Image 1 (cartoon, helix red, strand yellow):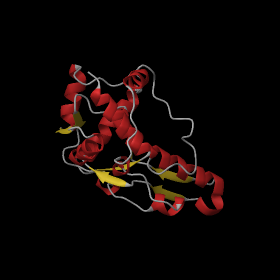
Image 2: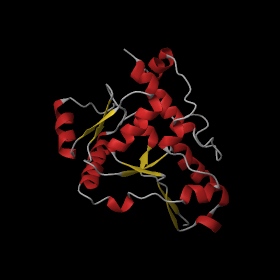
Image 3: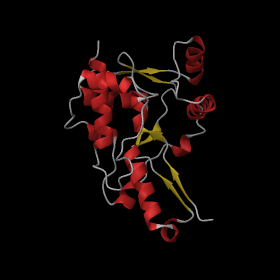
Image 4: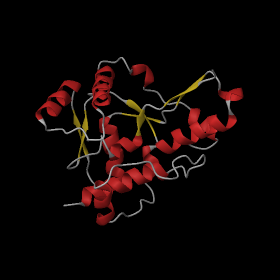
Length: 207
């Protein structure tokens, strides 16, 4: 059976869900370690292209998709610039995070299955101790396959659209789901990063 493996690393959209800054603070349980980042629109566009072009071109390929490599301090800086608000990074260890989860200080979202939550902590441990260093690299895979620049966190800095408090509260009240256009093979390059930054800006403005 023909196969092609897409390696996405960390989704930028996690900054709106399980990694969302709270009270102006981004928790980063990997010390000063950098990780690779990729936008959901880029993953979907690559997947659509692979499926459309088929095994003749893509069979047996491993595509590593990270378009940014940033640590907690760098992510907080990018979000601060994008939202015009100070977002600080709280640098932690995986053990710190485990203690906070056990004490209830950090609550795992209800839609995160228990085994997957455990795997997230294990990933943080392997990142912190260096076992994931091999994956903390950017590649030109997205740009090469899609023939356009990839999405990065910084591309969301310009033209941030305003979001009303009612819209943000509505988003908070329902489970997050991908947008209807998530599988479009040619997304606007800065949509995902712009949406992340716009949503964080609105969230940070709430009382």
